[in-house]
Length: 131
Image 1: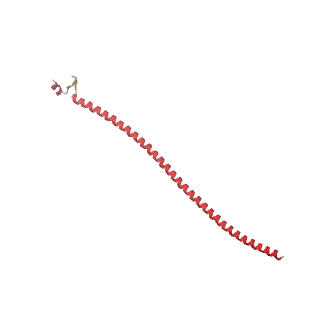
Image 2: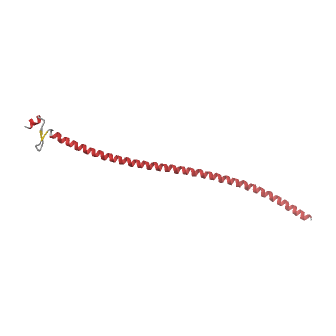
């Protein structure tokens, strides 16, 4: 009788229920459905992990970019400070040179005044001696 039912496209399962589809195919279909659902869940978990990883990488990239900009700013600040120190050094060297020139001028003037003083002292001495 089962052969006649099968010819008509009807099947009897393990618990003796009448089915339109072969019970083996129905079981395989159910197993495939469960595997597909499990695969879909794993795929969803993977997608969540990938999105979280992407967010972490984005945040890390932003941190790296921020630190990079800070490093560039610090580097520029150091260059500016070096240029300022060089300018100050040149200014101080210029002042030292000016002061050295003034010192030389004053030394020459002092020597000149000493000569004049000694000449005048000689004149005074000679005038006093002649009187």
